[in-house]
Length: 296
Image (cartoon, rainbow, N blue to C red; front, side, top):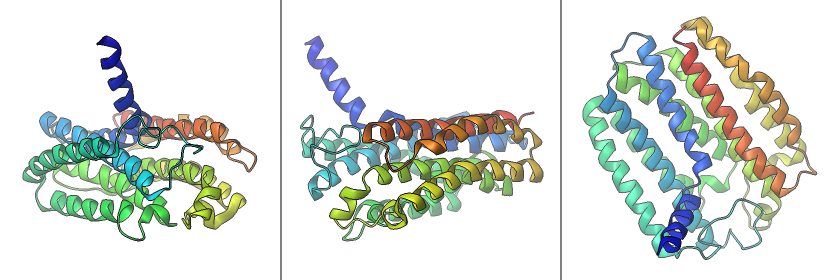
């Protein structure tokens, strides 16, 4: 029985892709920290609901992507990326669909509470996110199969996530929140770029025209370098418009510089999987250092 329970935990822990969860949590922490640094009183129940809602949306998206790519035939047993539970036979498509639906349902209930707290701006962000989420994964031509995937991640997992979290704590918005959203959104977009760079040959065979596939090897490498380095220029903007302590996040620059050479044409799938996690870690460190710095 213990082994059975443990295997279930391993299956679903793998399915939710825990390495991606920092990309959902960091914007919430950062947006809230910016509001508190601007003298907003912490609203802890709202903060916890926002954080949990963001995590549930990320988990639901990961699960839906897992099963949707399997059903489209985009994922095969010989895929280069991290293990997907549906194609590996660890879980049935029906069970993955059910857990994804449960995640979205719980996120919807928390979202209703957040709309009650934040009013129409949060409702607008929620509706736009639902529509964009469907367009990203659903329909005949999903955004995830196009060159706009990185833009989607930047906007919804970066800018709107930080601005919405800031609004829920303060009742207003600020230029620093928009800039900070781009600071953490760009590394998140870079994670997707690395993922699509790794899968570019298979994607092209299946008619998926992602940004990495369209740009080619050298173009994708330049785009990745831009997504990794541009946040540090935006940090200067945050420091200039409102919070000089934002410069603390420049401590992550040496780490960022080590990532850029790791994306190259000869890199293996396993090496690129490691770069996925390292790029997500960059976004985490940028967000946490920026959140800490605004209090200085």
